[in-house]
Amino acid sequence: MQRAFNFNAGPSALPLEVLQIAQAEFLNYNGTGMSVMELSHRSNEYDKVHQRAKTSFKELLQISDDYEVLFLQGGASLQFSMLPLNLLAKDKTAAYILTGEWSEKAFKEAKKLGHAKVIASSQEENYTYIPSHANLSLSSQTAYLHITSNNTIYGTQWHSYPELVDIPLIADMSSDILSKKVNIDQFSLIYAGAQKNLGPAGVTVVIIKKELLTKIPEHIPTFLNYGTHVKQNSLYNTPPTFSIYILALVLDWVKNQGGLDGIETRNKEKASLIYQCIDKSDGFYTPHAKQDSRSNMNITFTLPTEELTNCFLSLAKENGFSGLNGHRSIGGCRASIYNAVPLESCQALVKFMEKFRQIN
Image (cartoon, rainbow, N blue to C red; front, side, top):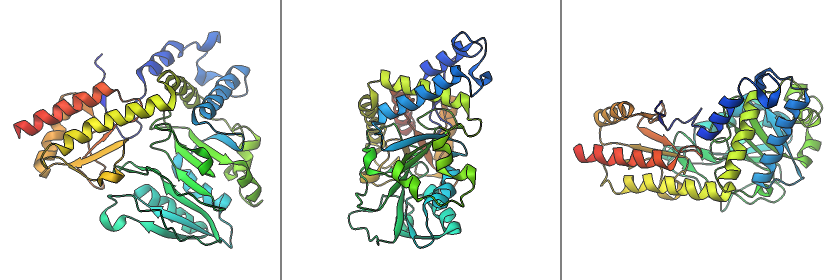
């Protein structure tokens, strides 16, 4: 079977090696005579999978013992409300920086649960850039500052983060976690849906500083309380066992790619290849994001006319490219080049883009 050139924004490409291992083990995991999906989440066999995923994740991201790592469900979208439920006290205000649709949604959920305000935004320019965080105005009554580190729809990405004192920095890193080295100690909480760089949809990883757990009020519903999942090692209810199993395999694959250093180098190479093609096209391809805010995960661009855009996408599909349509809210084109997208797929896309431009 010919594998597609997979540029889907999520669920997205998984490493071929990971899929092959999962295929080989699908009916009989580790001599159990059962699939991972059939194992009891309380069994010793599954416990080894669970702990391996957790240990590998902490090793790769260099997460200290000051933090807990949780495997939850509900996607990043549940975290939009779970976060303020746990950390937004009545006498505090949550601060949000808006850089796209997902940060808007996170802000709207916080407003339903307490005081929240926008302290910076690039909405007025259709989210083409990341606002400056050099002189943020945050009072001592700020519960936390929330950012979305990468914006899949608009193709922008934070390349440095606010440095705060005594105010927790929270990040939704769903679409660029594990794509580059990050100083975890700069953050108090990070959450990420798995379906971009970590594995299949179904599991959401939360990295939470232990000191935050002491601030959670007692009235929070049991399942929505971070402390519940810390105490139960993410096994309060049946976890998404197969998704966590694939996550463990993906983490092994990342290690084999040279860890985050190797992954980051390759991601920069892939992004540079496509951006160079766009920048050298004499305006035929126009990037959505301003240059200093460009994402290395989601490359968004438009063509001169809607007719050409539709033709480009139609021919791309005929040539084995999947997922190049821009988000329905802004249109255009988008190439999502997460960790598992091979360099060869990006080279094939550039070749197709150059040929299409020459013909048109």
